[in-house]
Image (cartoon, rainbow, N blue to C red):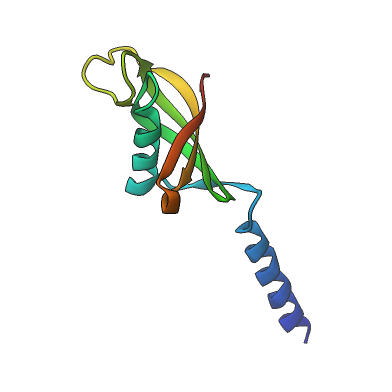
Length: 109
């Protein structure tokens, strides 16, 4: 009985970690990178490399990326012109079912 109760509590704790509100470290996948590049394409910051990322479930997903990148005429992927990358923190809101991907915050760190 005690073993069953502990197993049940573990499942509840794990389920709560996946609910809306909390930030958790996330793997950088081709989809998360694509969301970052789409969001940055509307800014003047480009991404050279992603250092790490975390995610938050909301009415969609928030991603916080810590990147090396450059400021320039346009954002998205950095080309060869990015010779001296700097660190940036970029928060992206992504809601695929409405085709919404925006950078809600871009700051040099």
